[in-house]
Length: 410
Image (cartoon, rainbow, N blue to C red; front, side, top):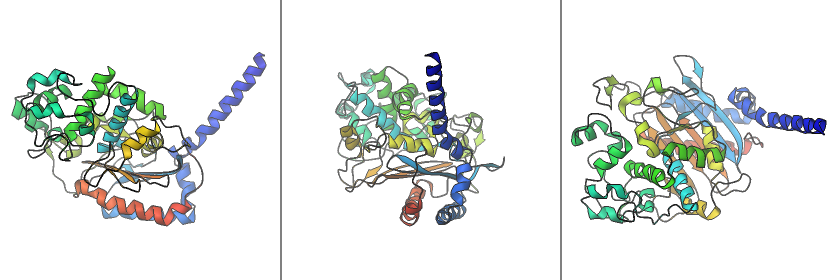
């Protein structure tokens, strides 16, 4: 009996090793070299290389899935040019506002667990964050729901600057001696009046997703990061995501180096230290943005996450079909989807993210393909670079999608 069990165990170990082999291949660039030998895909690589040259981007990573199968994963250019480190598919990069999709998934998990729903009030006697009620002077706050935050309809304004990326202004305005924690940021901002009645106007708000991070903590009884890791990422098989640091010294193992636009000038450290720093390393409180923009991960693991919430049947989803439909449902051109940036009547979903040193684009198409491109360099166009990246992916998909191998590297 013991010998039989040993044989079974050995067979299982061989199966696991065989399943992991493709992963090791693409992480070690063996896959990249073999894919480069596919003649039909050489122009795809050349177009991406040309795109990087035109925009002076040091490096990028691409992942493509079809029907929940990873069919292509490749790094281009440099992960760290100064050290001669080439970009690999397994390198992790800051995801900027793609983090909002991750946060929205966390909210939907809590809804399925019965700990909140999209119509739950955020403030007020029955609100999730009722601890801040005594600081509120504008009664419109009590009409804000979780869905308003997810859809950027809570009524917050950025007319005086985005508080998440105006740390030194917030410190001066509220007499703080150090960068605000999430709790302090909320305490400061809820004393200000809203710009519009909740539910009437769509205006993109990073602060709204910071509130969602706090809601996750209150409803789950866990820290935001621990909840997302345990209830979202690990359930999808994603093990390398982490909240990004602010400085080069905070760089995690396997993380790329970030580059601002060429000829950019150093700016004052967000912390108020008086130091001059590159904008991508100290210009903003990346870590403090939490669920609005702090996550870092690889294009491959991000593709794995998307494959776990896309409603296809080849890979188990971590959300129920109705929840997935609810997240991506198209309402109209002026209404944000839940976590996604845009949706179309045909079912095409888009999520973008941009920081200094980062540009990320996720495109999920109705036919089951998902294309992800992330760079470690920003350009003078800032968030508008996504407008240039989307036509690139559309062209690559149209011209070369049919040549992508039939395989599953997950």
